[in-house]
Image 1 (cartoon, rainbow, N blue to C red):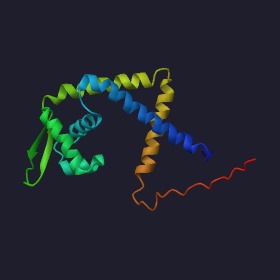
Image 2 (tube, helix red, strand yellow):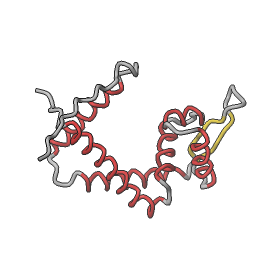
Image 3 (cartoon, rainbow, N blue to C red):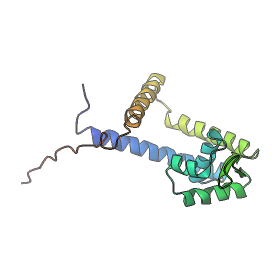
Image 4 (cartoon, rainbow, N blue to C red):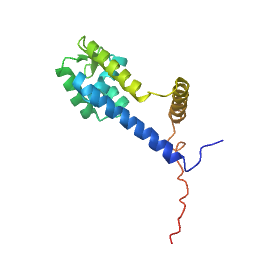
Length: 165
């Protein structure tokens, strides 16, 4: 049993809207607590999970232009949260590392994220949450497994003409 062609836009819109609202709510709560923009907290979290990554690789990972990421990292460096260090073998590269001051900020980020998800999932049964996570992970796997852009090309559904009058 597949999803109907006319249900696909609704599912896509729901995914988009939920992701947007989660980001918006996190921003609202995080601004006052953390004093960071969304771009800054995402960058800080990526550096935490990829300690020692070079700026170019991080820009690729985040799908940002290198100059855009450089400006974000400049602000994190100025706040004392991140440090640029010389690469061990390539003197042209700089690697990114978290400073000790970033640890309490990351802990606050985790508390804010937990509060946002608690609010978002209020009244949703644990079994529904488990099912949603499994479904989203399956979708992610399906879309991530396609390396060839030609393979993953989407064929547009035929447009149904509506008679007026």
